Image 1: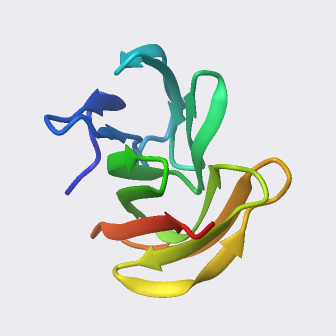
Image 2 (image 1 turned 180 degrees about the vertical axis):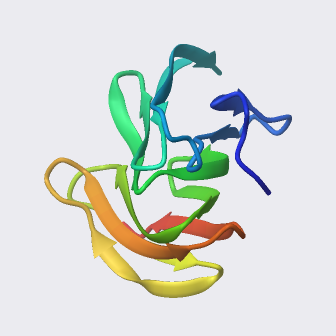
Image 3 (image 1 turned 135 degrees about the horizontal axis):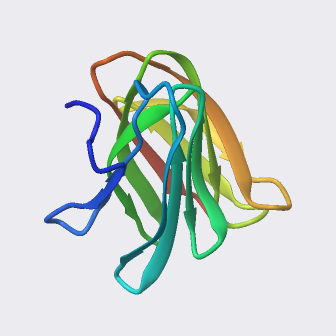
Length: 137
């Protein structure tokens, strides 16, 4: 996998790919419409941020490229690539527990805060890592 030139794109399976961790200058796309939702993405080598309908969905520090993001009521699945140890933050349901898997290894469970945010780290390199977040309750 590699960075994507479009900054954000809708894949054939209706998943989203976005971000460019190699960009030195900030890049952004506003009002990207997919499946009736409006997305906004900002990306460069320091941060990648995706908002859905004005609300944070995914943020990485430093920046990353996210491939094939699929969000359902019970899970979020995507692949992430970048460089270095990367903090990944998602805004989900508030006060809810989730299991987090990186490359099919359960790295633990985490409860979202009052605002619905969870954060965890993944050691990314230029080979994509699969991320799976599963709602427990």
